[in-house]
Length: 164
Image (cartoon, rainbow, N blue to C red; front, top):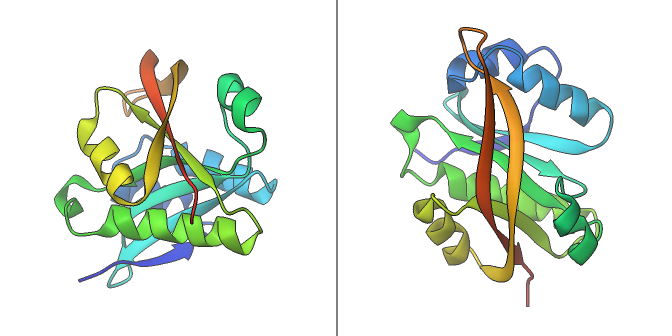
């Protein structure tokens, strides 16, 4: 069954954390950003059950991307539950994010993909994104289910979808 994609609403952060296996607080933070107008948190559902989520940010997170592309909307935090992968839910989330950006007058959308994730890159390229040649290192911190902090670095390949 194909997912229905909708905008997340206040009060469902804990349910999203649980359904998607995210550490507590991940979706509360993203809902907070949405409330501030910095992004739109999209949820993919099948039969009313969350199976994936993604964020459409109104400006890129990384300085190198902002320097080159300005206030280009950017898809991030794209996640589909492992049991639901390969069923088109990621495609539905990307399509919804691109449609939302277009409705806001933004034809182009960017996405950073970890160089170690060729499957994701293939998906985005198939969906009309093109490699820009921009590479950078994304450094971030996250806290796991046990409260342990992890400092990560990813080599990122930046892709942009421009209709036409």
